[in-house]
Length: 261
Image (cartoon, rainbow, N blue to C red; front, side, top):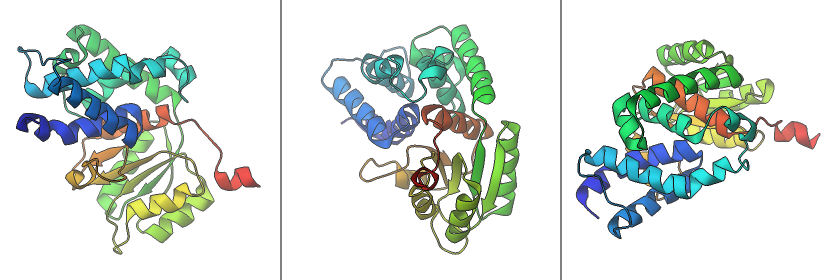
């Protein structure tokens, strides 16, 4: 595989996982894209940068295969798809999470720049108005925790609590029953935010967004890894976009504990 493809693979995985809401589906989408390029079924446009061209190729595969599944009203977010199409969410992630300009996002999607700008504005408005929930923040650095708290509230969500350790996070989740978890990977007492999230997911079927300063360790595709990943130091737009995407793709459900009662 060409070196320029390999250099972009982790970022394609991050994006594809967020786009589909699932590590396996996202990694498979990247694999299908690379196979299509290597087999000559898709060609990179000569007038685009390698990165933009690769994302455009990924979208071609996604529209042909995975994107169609979302449009068939089988996804948990079925009702919301009437007002928020896959391309709207794609523009939001490209600009907010991957740092594309609206012009680059338009090139990646194969649309006009002014259309990409309209889609981005629509995504922000729709996600902000439809998805309010209670958010549990697992973060041991007070300043970052305050920053995340402000961001969550700015989006219209409620903060269910802030935990600095695995045990504290699990305890807060049991009492607050959050609808979303934002979790740092490495916590103050040496415990893991991933372990805390795993414990919480034994009782609650909710989306989890992980935050780490070492994203390259979690974007290999070689083992179970997060579907939603934010890099430290994080960009506010990226946090907002992933919160919206995670909630959009995940149906609101009661906790497993309550369902069993």
